[in-house]
Image 1 (cartoon, each protein chain N blue to C red):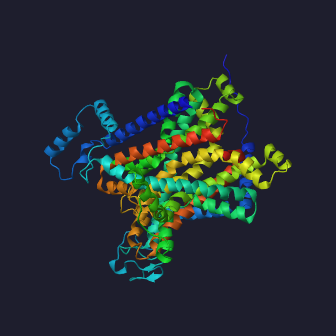
Image 2 (cartoon, rainbow over the protein chains, first blue to last red):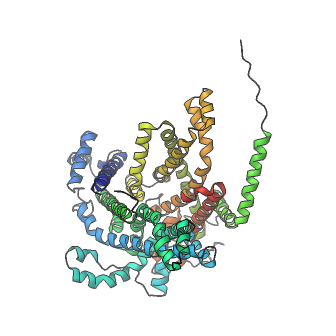
Image 3 (cartoon, chains in turn cyan, blue):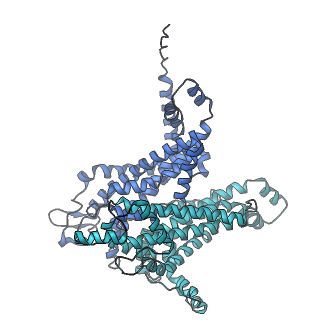
Length: 324
Length: 307
């Protein structure tokens, strides 16, 4: 178990170094990165001063090492528009983004598995057909457009769900105020429903299709026939025998889907004015606030890597064939 | 002693009729499945709009008419202008912008696949054929890239490089190469040991010829399936990036940017601003997905687990 964790941590370290290298290269690709840090009306003298202050006049390998050293200390530089450390701004927005991401992941699993199972048990029926059609559609709808449509229908037309706003849950939890956190929970979920579904719809569709094909494969196998022959109730056959084997590929898939999910979160946050990293990044894009974009990218990459590590561990836990 | 070249036996007739038979089989399978036919028609329509946009669009997509701001669909404007799908906040014709938007979506979708596919195919061929450290380096690079949500990298590069069709094609293209490299590598590994590859080697063909003339043609089929799904996801990514304001310059109409503009009018309930561009994206992406599904089943049902 520990060797597995250590190996995965080492792999993650390599990925993180890769990410920093790419982040660094991206900066250099603009030609002279100094111009990204000064205003358009800056004088030559100001430009030269900034260049020296930021170390862009030094040789590239030295610049990269300085860059890495600063990153290790959590120093991404000051945000150009907020005039405070970029990392602070990103960390402040992180809890809201985590709430949305985790809630979307929860939906992607909890909604998709029953849909896929029902479809597989009624193969070829109208139920199966409609679930699969919605599944196909779900993989073709941009999450932000779905968000806009939901706002128009559920928010503005029917007025049953809030079109923006956010009630913190993770923030009070982290600051130790558990009572407050759980008092906030119902409201927090209420505000999460629409953005959560907008982000998760793609994954729900994909997972439902995956569960269905995985179930169909398992249901045709000998051990399922044996279980049925033994006279076990159909419910037990499906849940205890088939599903337990069928959801392994789904767990793998969920790990890979974080990428999509995080991409979706960044864009959907914009639609719902969700106070997370996505909205921060969007504002930073408009201000060309490079340090904030860099900090956001690296932090989200860390979140992604951590979540993937957890999925791997869960996978090892539920599949006894995987030896750690 | 000079060895005279033996004139090649004309074998033209067979492969041609074979190809025709395959085509007929494909058409029959498509008609049977029905939906792929609809998808193909939709895509032809989108392609038509993309190619002939300037000739068929009723108005200049950037022509502003302040008097006609936010006109409802089916409104008649001045000077014989008719706004079938209404106008946006600057009084620009939504239908014309929609038709022009097809260009960017298709252009970016297809070119990004060509960029990513070319890189991926070459990388996969090299990794699979040579193995060893070349294989290791290429595949580990791919692992690193996949271990990271690509859209974030795309955002970062585009913020720094600035908007532009070329930039977005390159960034999204580079994002796709790993999928191709993995599949091509796996196929190359198994083909490398096939008799006809060995025969080519025995005949003294150069490595270059073996890789590109003998192996490559035999792995095209699964690539078309992946490409079809890929175009769909690239179009979605392009729409997301345009929505964030990272796509093409503001004077070029794109579906994603139209949706971004529509946000300003969301509270005013100008539904057509958000509805039509979204439908355009969904129909295009859905069609590529349906075609991909069909193509996969048609070419090789075993691929089902891959995509």
